[in-house]
Length: 333
Ligand code: F6R
Image 1 (cartoon, protein in one colour):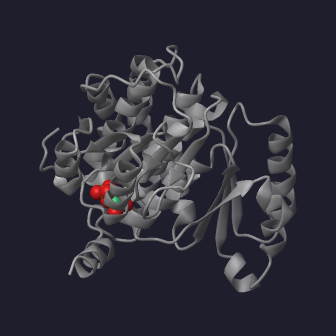
Image 2: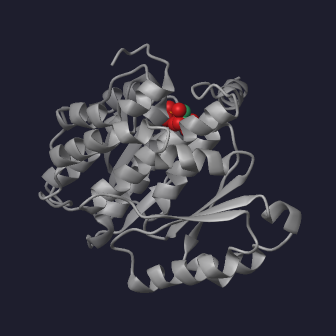
């Protein structure tokens, strides 16, 4: 894919190929010593890759923290592994995390296409995973995420069984159908149009609906809300009533993953039953795929297409993010 391509539809189509390319990226050798804690630091389209890695690390015995802020969590030590991800390399929160992790003497890996972060990493002899430049960060998810998975596999923190090649084949087999006019992606973009999408998933898979929200925010220039089960069953479920004129404009979508806890599946069923009279409509999304990684990336791919088609419905340019750019410009003064 050309570096200067600025067509979001092409970038979304490119995800399987991007993962395929990223499998081959050079990665540094992991440290011998197991970490006391793993931290993923990064914002927005870069930060989501840490959230997704955390899902895969759910069964390891090492605590995992995703940090989307300045500085570094106070539990970080010289024995911690800190992954600092910033696609541009110029995001001030990520740079601040890097600087604090250097002060502590943690084991750091930087994932970036360049910028200040790359310079700082080289100056401090910190290993860098270099990714191709010229993409909107949110369209570089494969580049940012896959090398970290490979690094953790090599470091013995993730299972060798994670089959990235099979993931690529699976996504390639799904991608085209999602563009058809009768696809689930078109259908949901119609349902979300002029309504507020409210997206629900289990706590474990919450990052996946966060990806949907942020893609709807950035690509479609539209508002969306997310919340996790079971927690929303203890509060938000009662709030889905007023102001009634507003709630009636919500389209709720519940994401049910094959390995969600059976009680979560029951909660989704009963919650749909209880709230469906208050909102405009409810959908149940069950991802395709034969394993967790395929479920996650199938859902992400559908969401990326939904956000693209919704952008078209709203007559918005899915690439440009003028408010984010303007805010960064003002803060850099
Ligand atoms: C833009 C995007 C944003 C950026 C975020 C952090 O496509 O997705 O959310 O990812 O502003 O910037 P980077 O990724 O350069 O650290």
